[in-house]
Image (cartoon, rainbow, N blue to C red):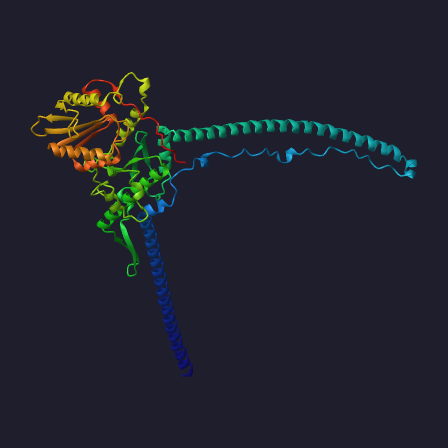
Length: 517
């Protein structure tokens, strides 16, 4: 009995130990699982926080495009374009130093007593052998030194040629910079155009915003037309925030509302436009009139064709620009103040018609500026009398199918000609003013035309000039809706089309006002 009770007690104790061990293992496993959940939760929250931080930084870059961009100087110091680098000096390393010549060291003389035992003859042989080795070493040295000297001469010759080539390249580069600077001072069209494009290429924009701008420049009135690329709506993050959900161990996205995306996108394209405007004015103090058009690359959903619609168009002048404190403006409000054309739905995108077509501007600027009247046999419209020019304009409109007559020179109430379109649908009375000018046409001429239209109760007004219009004129004409502007470059083409004559308008004379440094 005793032994049986002992075995029973041991079995009970073993079962209790096993249960205790199981409970300990279960508790340890639960603790480990709790620790793993805490670590997963912490890692998930950290991931969500990092995603939110990256998202906030991305949005901040978009919200502060204008303010950050204003910190970079727009003007380019042409002196920084000059090369001052020198070609590295010739480095021959160890080969530039001659190795030491062999030195004759005779074997030591034998002791006096050694001579009695034949040591002298042995010493003479050693001297002869040493002399032979020394002479061989001298010959080897002379050959090696001659080869080294030849190699050094070749290296110096190559280095001298490389130095001359480098100096010639530096001289050519610096000469090109000097010619470039001279072209800017003389307001050469190609040089100014290249400079403006270079200045705009340095515009500080986020990495996910396109950096592309083209410039058409004309010294007539110091006009510049800029076409630049805007980012698509995809630049705005679709996610507003991230949250870690512990129950599913996932990071949940909160979508950004469409209204917020549209509002931020409008702010982005407005900021970019104002920044380009600032950079082109600040980079070149000579510019008087600037027109900018922001385009976006898109695919027409109806046709599937790639397009480049204009989302924003603005024209302003030097007189207006100093009144803008761009660091503190609200882009939308500032653009309204400047009478900018902005797409109502840029995110779709819904295009606007630019104030001036860029490709036509570049074409007309080139033709208007590059023709030299003194070397051309065509009639220069700027050289005929004002009265002749008014009759010329009347004939042009008559040739296009309208009825017209020229008013008397006195008491014409600012009317140079009146034309009538007999079309019952779109016809009516049109007041024409013809300005044979060589300087810029300002906004006051638009007001004068509007007054004449009201006085004569005319439905439309046309202002024709051999010159060009300030940016404000185009804005006024667009806002009025009943005024058409025809400047010199367009007038040349109309004469060719309707009167079948080749005429030209001479480029303006060099300006005499002081140059900015």
